[in-house]
Length: 136
Image (cartoon, rainbow, N blue to C red; front, side, top):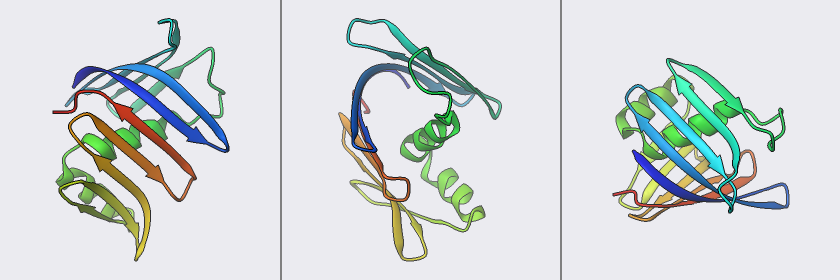
């Protein structure tokens, strides 16, 4: 993946919107977060299991590993995701319209996907975001 995405997020009663340039392949993930004027709001890099995140805007308490995990849940191969989740005691389902992560019979994450949109709902942690871009 090497594309621009519009990110809309909601958490704790707050709504956020930003742009992101995402480059991802089998070696890692690079994300550059930008405001509406194109100013850098942060950079996230994941290589070899190590995560680095720098941002003049987002709080230090933001755990970049959650962002990487969410991205992997949305876009990585279903078999790889299912295997990793099984090791954590969770189950994974993939349908024509998206993916779900379950703890027993309880859905904790729902992902709805189309060619131009991904909607991610984390029921466990109480946040939602939508990615708009070209996800062919």
